[in-house]
Length: 105
View (cartoon, rainbow, N blue to C red):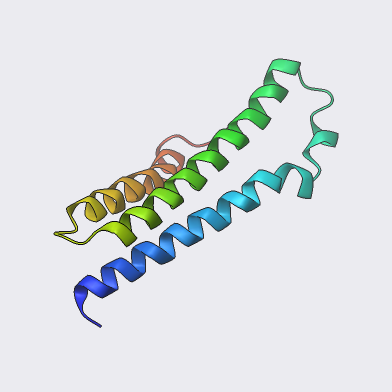
């Protein structure tokens, strides 16, 4: 497998994995019964908790779809695919960097 085919294959797998993870994240609060744990917290915090989950799920879904579509449509240099890879890598690596530099309470 040549480097171009490998690059496109990896981007497609990553895009599909992101879409699959977004589907799980959309139903995550129901799977783990978040509602029973948030009855005692203030309504704005409860709203924020569920909103952040929806926003993150949407980010994963749209990012995955854009990655898949762009990879399938990319016929030239692949510069856009490399940019998408870099964007996803910076997004994915930000969490461990933040968690290691600012520990949670």
